[in-house]
Image (tube, rainbow over all chains, first blue to last red; front, side):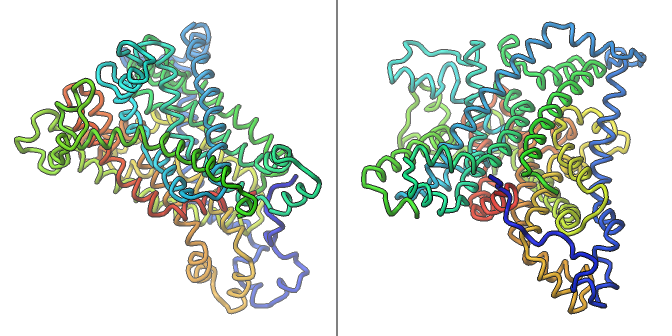
Length: 324
Length: 292
């Protein structure tokens, strides 16, 4: 099913068409014939920004990543080819961080998609109070990750945290626990905090897509004797494919890059239990002041996210749902 | 609507139950933060916490206004910095939003209405640039900004936020413009408008909801950022709200209630913006962000 919007008049009028024959239009710059210089003029400021603030830094950090450059020994800036990359790939800590990043990202994205979709399906129905719930889910979306971290740190607090109080009241635990001091719980706590912050965006995106499922599709399904779960499987889900891909791209990137929440909540600990690649990059660069290895780390993270986004884009493009 | 016709009472009750669950999921953690900000420190620290009318106070909030009073014994430095931090965040986020609107409208228009060689690669470059994690950009950006003596400068911070926001704004504006009928522009052309006149008098007013959504998103992204802000700012001349709040958290001497109050204050501007512009956000996201 093609999910893009119906044919919009987006292509310029062909040269022979009535519109382009109007004399008044031929003099104007915005007629498609002289579009190329004009288009690049319009794009000039944006291109400049991207070249200067993304293009240059990317090249520079690649250059640094090929050097031995440690601020603790600032006089040495020696070209070492790919030695930094070799060092990192030979370091078991890197593979641990990669595994933790993968676990964090996969679990967080699955939860975000599942909760977001469930909430969107719920809010797509009419019931008393649904307007209120629609407003309420904007709250997590509007909360900055740093404040979100502060909030959950307070909830997980070992001595006076609300989670401890709640679990003891429910009879689940006997004694208060230091949740963020136990490796598994710390990663779990991080995922809970991150997904709470992020599920709302997914829900809003899904809800928008759901609201545009043409009612005729369901009517046709009913005529054909579809059961509710069948119409969900064969009508709703295919319709959501594009929104799903967008959510997957966005949330994968956000999870791989998660930094603020880790900084506030666990600082990569206990031990290395929540040290993701992004956190390892930060530590190498700003704690160890080893810019050479730090840049190599950053480059590896970049390559991973770029690789993932290429895969996602190919899927979008392959389905014919991505067009300029 | 569709469902309303066939919905039974049991279904309605189930849906309301689901809505209640979602509300609890969202509000329980957040209200604990808000509640703490209205409590006395001693009541918060007791186990289990004393919650009741006796412990209600607005003293924590007053501390942030008169940070140097006797009220502020613990963590007064952080409290002093919170309001200036929020002000800095407002300046940086607003500037980011404004820059986004200008650059994003121009570039978005070119993708929606013009055909030119290199169009697709350019769009993919914009979108791809957003895939580069901030952690990979920050060291070179830091060194560059330092060379130009622009560290600790809100303008420099707002410009670096373009890397986080501009690709999405261009994408959003492109989709929004594509949804506007061409006939409007053609009519303007026939009437002899120049391109700039057409842009100002016709396209921008019609695209106002899309522009508003793009501005809100840019504002939110800039407001939320911590990584760039913590590296590029050094004094209260430019430290933003998240930097001040993160400072609270890592300072163990700060009172819990003050921390919570600072957190609530830092959430307030984006939260109010989100609630006020709810319709625009949802519209902008669904009509511009995702086609389908």
